[in-house]
Amino acid sequence: MSKPKYFLYARKSTEDDDKQVMSIEAQLFELREFARKENLEILEEFQESKSAKTPGRPVFNEMMAKIEERGNCGILAWHPDRLARNSIDGGRIIYAIDQKKIVSLRFPTFWFEPTPQGLFMLQVAFGQSKYYSDNLSENVKRGVRQKVRRGEWLTKAPFGYINNRITRNIEPHPVKSKIIVKAYKEYAKGTHGLESLAEFLAHHGVTTGSRTPLGKASVKRMLTNRAYLGFVKHNEEWFDGSFAPIISPKLFEAVQKVLSARAHPRRQKKKHDFPFTGTFSCGECKSMFIAQWATGKCGGKYRYYRCTKKKGACSQGYLREEVLAEQIKEQLQTISLCDKYTDWMLQRVEKWEHEEKDLSQSSDENLSVKIKESESRLDKLVSAYLDGDVPKEIYLKKKDKLMRESLTLKQKKKDFNHRGNNWVEPLREWILDTKQADFLSSSTNLKEIASFVKKVGTNPKIRDKSAHFGAPAPFGFIASSRRFLPACAPSARPSSALSAREVSICDSTENRTLILGMRIPRPSR
Image (cartoon, rainbow, N blue to C red):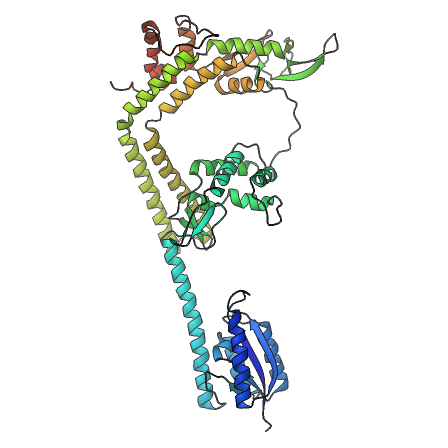
């Protein structure tokens, strides 16, 4: 039989061009030198940059096809593991040897002869290569599972975070994390779509590689990325992370609510700038008041409001916008307090807040119990899934919901510890509303006036060209007390000090049952 000619095969383990580039060059140098010393004739060289863990290497398959067609060939490689790390490719080579297609295998680091003993050793070498590959994979998976248990991020940090090489975890980027928070807050307002938010992000320097605004899919992924809540994702499942979150659960849920509402948006007609549209109903037929443009006798245009009369005959006429605005301002004055009184009240609220911080222990314990119950339900769900009682799809959905609920409860507990009792903010907001009413009673911003009426007003209606709206019980305190309180001078800055008589009147705000319309005990003295 004539001396066989050899196919030289060199392979590196990774497909990245910047890794192990010298490995394949070193193989070629060593193999050519080995062929020269052993007087081996190289018929063709094959180079490949692909893992041999699984079948399907195109260059290897091309070489084997030529060997199976030509026959009486040899293969020159650095080691058997360069040829195969899986049972299919290894079996293909052994079968080619059995069929006399391959008559020689030469390795600088391994001995082989086409004998039963040689084939056995070759099978052992292929088996060791497969074992090494499988064991390496298990070691990597085990390492990943341990990182997940520690709550560490597994891959490249998402936008808004940076990788910390020392802790092998991620941490919020000092600038980009603030951009994420801004984007979430903007979208939570409901005034942005995905495209306009992409423009907002582009304005803050967040673009694609070609410096164009992000696509809608990228923006949506950003708005639904639970990594910003401090979660780690592995195998389509989220776990608690050990890194600092960027977004609060409250803000995240607000964004999800807007996304859900915009999933099937309704087409809206372009609206005119009529600030009081949708605010007042007719006092006669209960239909809504709408706005229209009209032309006066002198040719000037003005806006007026009228009843739609959709619920039947109605005798109500129209009302000019400027007249309506003045009527609203007059009513705002009845529920307003100037800075002299509101500043004093805010100081009292701050004092009460400090006094009642010690009373929050029971509520804190209640939240702790709920957190433990949520964690217990999560543990039971995981156990049921591991026992095979719950399908994976249902398990992932339920787990995601429970994790978000638990995070929300933890955030509530954290916020409660900072804020104290929950009566403070409603009372403070009411005082600021009275202050805002005072400001708007002389403002020309009709949109802000309309928004404020919608916020604090009840049953706003127009009848006989007269606008009226009710106010909640706390504002009744203002109406009943204004006749006893001296008005603040509009031209001079009022003194922060109150007289004994003014303190006596304003001090009735301590009865928060009247002001807030809820049963809350007075602060302890």
